[in-house]
Image 1: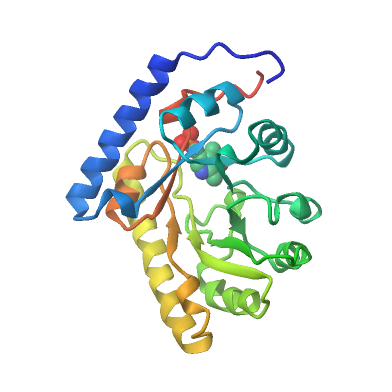
Image 2: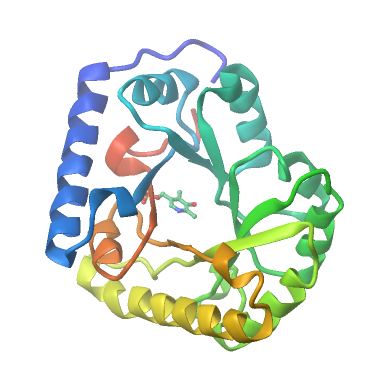
Length: 242
Ligand SMILES: *Cc1c(COP(=O)(O)O)cnc(C)c1O
């Protein structure tokens, strides 16, 4: 990230066109409007110049997973993009992110909620991450615990729960992700019903389902995703050594 990167704008544009075509086709299959789905370009490990190039091509939302990397990029880009924090968040770093990004996708435990709530000048918009894959490595609350966890979060005025986030297990065939995404949508619908009963004045804040990555975002759109998190299909492969 220290030396200005050589960005192939034509290549970025062709990848974005391709992703947009896939999003459009998936929306059409699902009978949904394109405007119902927000593309989040996941820029972790990729240089600022690539973010700027995609922003110039009309991408407004970017996702990062590591606090320090995000801080460096956000410092340079200032307010020109809308940031999503999508990675696992340590409670001791919560204060750097709360109030500074548009949405935190990875809230999954009370200690993190407490840390985020210390930043109280404005409500912090969050998604509750749900462990739909059953893999320990992925983070997220257990599906059975989602409604109770939600109740503990909305008990605080400092956080605004905008919806849920989840990840399907890695698979070659995107169809394999469908039952996981369907499950997350059902959990979301169950949560909305729960909220209408238990926190009716807060239920309207729920509106987002963040699911789908480069390999499976079309299936996610068909299953109701409102936010898709797409990295390598836009930026190319990640190089963690760069
Ligand atoms: C890196 C990452 C993505 C993007 O993954 P791609 O397969 O490159 O699209 C999406 N969501 C999360 C949580 C990630 O960490």
